[in-house]
Length: 225
Image (cartoon, rainbow, N blue to C red; front, side):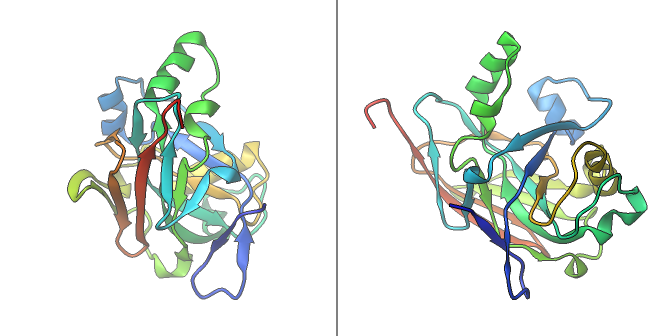
């Protein structure tokens, strides 16, 4: 079943296309995981089946015991583009939203050791909670937005999009040289420091003022489930 996202004020919903994600785009987050800073944006993808709406339930699969939260600014592409110049990027962005990039850290680490892809750590069902989107016109400076995340009311992440290594215009321009960007594509722009584990029963809230809030609950599957 095709999934859709809402753009506030629009009379229609966007069918979700590609979900393109950026890793290692905040220096403090790179440091906390002990990774090296990349020369170019690190890109990976999630399927549309990973998306759940605000108020949904994150289901940590039984093959992981270490699921981490990563709060991010999400972009909604509204206009097809290829080889988009950085100065033209905002002509292709329809809106901004709040997203979580949920990561099975134990699984990801094991895949990295084996030199294997990360999809099973990044693209599992419910790994991409996503808010509705506000019009890009309502966000005058997307490079100066606060990103906060709480778990059970405790502040875990508190960063700013000004801290991005690769700003939005450069990210989208770079991606458009690799992929044709189409209406309904979603781009997750990376997470600030403060990522950490989620446990069964946790209540998570991510917020970006001027953009919106996203709330999810967490359950952990067991082998018997």
